[in-house]
Length: 109
Image (cartoon, rainbow, N blue to C red; front, side):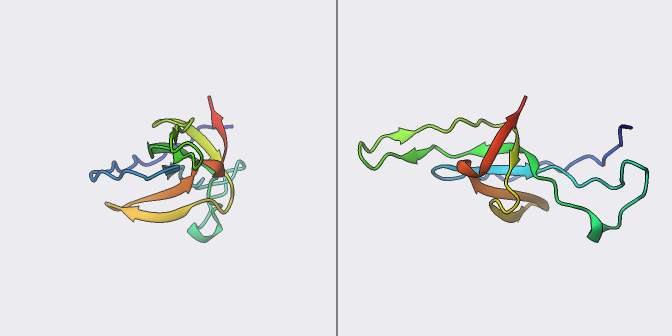
């Protein structure tokens, strides 16, 4: 596969702290062309199911003991998530997703 150049991504300027077991993910950009070199219009691009964790909450609360259950993810983890995961939001012109940690399928090393 040939490497493709992508436009630089915008950085978040406003802080956003997810609550509980929620995480904030910056979805990877959709591919602009196929492996054979055909350029795709915006409507034909599939939304990737991968992204980078931007922030994590404090963890869920155990209802029996009242203690916090820490999250296994951390800022900077590259993750794979389910197709219909999370809620899409726009913050400072950047498209982000807020989702539960349980919607994450794997961490990419």
